[in-house]
Amino acid sequence: MKILDGKKTSQEIQKEIALEVEQIKNNGGKVPHLAAILVGNNGASMTYVNNKVTACERVGFNSTLVTLPEDTSQEELLTEIQKLNQNPDIDGFIVQLPLPKHINEQKVLLAIDPDKDVDGFHPTNFGRMALELEAFIPATPFGILELLKRHNISTEGKNVVVIGRSDIAGRPMSILLSQKNWNATVTLTHSRTKNLSEYTQKADIVIVALGKPLFLKADMVKNDVVIIDVGITRVEDAKSSKGYRIAGDVDFEDVKDKASYITPVPGGVGPMTIAMLMKNTLLARKRKR
Ligand code: GUN
Image (cartoon, rainbow, N blue to C red):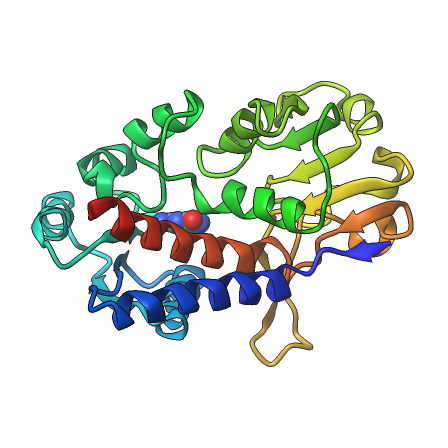
């Protein structure tokens, strides 16, 4: 079994981006500027956004964090989005999800200028991605593709089973892998799939993006399978000083001896998404010129 070290790969990508930023600066250009809007005080979201801001500093980007209280109205949030859309200094921005329940997520994502939508969540980018046109690819599937590529794991003609059909992970992942660049035979499974193991047992690559800790077990996969774990759930842990630990969707200890490659949690897909958000922000900057 080999570990797909997302942390290390993410650091490599961030170093490459930092070098490009140096070159932009040396040529008198403007460095990329990423903004993030965080509404409320969801602990996990605060951590993710802080990680994104730290990554900006590491690669040499400018960053702006807009924090809004939990009771921010939808109108107030849309006003902040318009400000970022119109601010010529901002190359790209994200609205951290999930949003408080009183805010309509779809309306918010639709308000983002597709040219600044570095999360790739706007329908324009999603549609362009599906049609293989130039687009911003959502960071999670983009990161998984990059992790596979940099470990020379071919998807050509492989049976890939994706578990979970979310707009930001499972569904775009399934679309991308079926395209000509990747040539996988993809099965997108979800909570209503019957006899899931019948699919996963035939898979060369299993990508789990369900948000259910320890869901994938050894008896569900074949020998030498490649396993990608997208799950990052906080579970109570009295032994940890924080009171919780991060759990993936894969029962790592159970499946590890059967897998040829496997991503750990933490240190697998998570850090890759940060690197790809930086990559998309650099692309946004370049596409503007
Ligand atoms: N919440 C969980 N993942 C993401 C992400 O990639 N982008 C945003 N904006 N919110 C998220």
